[in-house]
Amino acid sequence: MKRTPQPDFTHLLSLSGPHGTFEHAEFAEARVEHGYCTDDVARVLLATSRESEPSFEVGELARKSLSFLSDAQGPDGRIKNRRAESGAWLGPRTSEDCWGRSIWSFGTAIARSSDEDLVFEARRLFERGIMTRSHWPRAMAFATFGAAEVLLGDPTHEGALDLIVAAANLLDRPEPVRGWHWSEDRLAYANAALPEAMMVAGSIVGNDRLVEMGLRQLKWLLDTSSPDGHLSVAPAQGRGPDSTREKFDQQPIEAAALSEACIRASEVTGDAEWIKGHELAVQWFLGNNDVASPMFDADSGGGYDGLTARGPNRNQGAESTIALLTTLQQARHFELAL
Image (tube, rainbow, N blue to C red):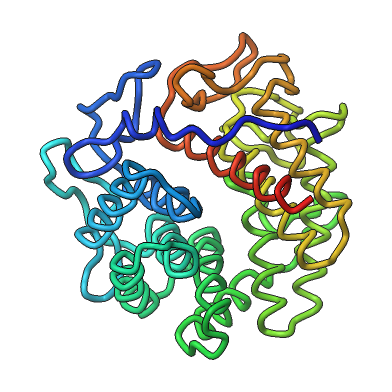
């Protein structure tokens, strides 16, 4: 694989406001009037915690993100997902994706951050967060990744193990027949996170069948997402077994999720062939996609919000930028290991 660009946090830092990272952007300018989203701030903590030698600014961004998530979390571990520009919280606390992504980010900070104070606070929030459960498969998948990070340092952590057992039970669903090798009626968003979580949970609880199901579903997803030799992920509106193959609008989160899942499959199986899926995801960002256009701004470091039939949606919101950053982080880690 060719050398890829290094993760550039310049644009992500420019989206930072007094409380956290603003969700939306118009081109490279933050749309502050739309406020903040906990989903995105959790992603920020994840990406910043993965930096082994963060700059001062990136370290400060990690601490601001953790403070935001601490404010979002309730005493039962549930999380508020919306915050106005003023700092006022909106809506109820839930155990939806914002909860799962927060657990993922806490676990990653505990396992990977070199900031001892941040690790201490992340551990406190993790312990509180895992008191609850979600009935949403993706939320439990994201939480599984965080619990697995904690188990790397503490293999006997009962709370993390209990959460993963619950996730394994939730994710162990029948696959539909007749060529649709997926556990849902249609592809939705962050799809590859589901088979990745099957692999993780199955490996930890000793359920080989769940691991094999995850590998099978990921292989099917990867094959159906790259029929022409490059990545062409499910569009924002999803895709079902009876739908025509609509290509657009494609979201960066899909490529990032495939990158993560394929690297995990390589680790679980020891089969380097899975790295090809990660490489397809990297190349999707670099321009090997359905319109042959790079999906990031080389000047700002921001990721474009979507791939349309006319080219990129050149707004550079937080979710898309972090999808780019985490994929480039994975590519850097892989290249350094060679």
